[in-house]
Image (tube, rainbow, N blue to C red; front, top):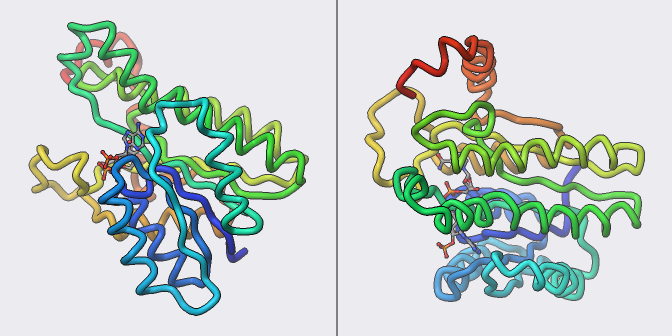
Amino acid sequence: MPLRNIVVFGATSAIAQEALREFVQRGASVYCVGRNPEKLSAVMSDLRVRAGPGQTIEGQAADLLDATGHPVLIAAARAALGEVDAVLIAHGTLPDQAECEASVERTLTAIAENGTSVVSLLTVAANEFAARGSGTIAAISSVAGDRGRQSNYVYGASKSLVTTFMQGLRNRLAPKGVQVVTIKPGFIDTPMTAAFPKSGLLWTSAQRAGRAVADAMEKGRDVVYVPGYWFWIMTILRHVPERIFKKLRL
Ligand SMILES: NC(=O)c1ccc[n+]([C@@H]2O[C@H](COP(=O)([O-])OP(=O)(O)OC[C@H]3O[C@@H](n4cnc5c(N)ncnc54)[C@H](OP(=O)(O)O)[C@@H]3O)[C@@H](O)[C@H]2O)c1
């Protein structure tokens, strides 16, 4: 079903920018929330050039670590768009695992950036859509949440929180006509992964990921791996017995 009025949190993310372009090209109005005002302004200017008459492109800057501001942001989006029929939560960080191991504070901040701030937005959106009896709520989790690995388990645990929380939310909201869409990308070429070598076959562009996010939301899918072959990779990885898995250098 085409989505008409969409709020995107973390709108300056490379994947979110591509999803926003898809939505605007498909005729939607959007409300963009990003942390960096200059980047956000550039994103909205680009979208306005692509938008047709009658499409609204609005937004505001906000640090999403401040959960007290989340209800206000959704209310501002509703005021700007008239009605909100979909929310995409895309913000996140890739913390340095070694730094997290050395610092409880860094670990808890990473979990707030990738986990609890998303849970807060999901809760606010869920209650709003449940009361109305319709809507689509999507968030970008990760394949990293499917199994903890030594190289990134703080990030992975935050994404597991998001994935499991959304699973419960989907179960709660299905009878109320609200779609809950969990996006699990694999390796996507974005600023987040700038430091990684990109030579392998498993890398995908932000543009392809953004289109997959828009398609998944419009189709009201439940859980989507991006690209789809990550479903098979993670199914195999999840089934490696723990006594073997714990000895692997992953
Ligand atoms: N790239 C991958 O391989 C990959 C794989 C799996 C999942 N993901 C997930 O995909 C999503 C999008 O990431 P990306 O790859 O597009 O990376 P990206 O371009 O680096 O985007 C991350 C975005 O999150 C924003 N952000 C971080 N903390 C924030 C906060 N407290 N408040 C508001 N915004 C905040 C950043 O804003 P600033 O510009 O202000 O820093 C940035 O725009 C993330 O959830 C990420 O975990 C990515």
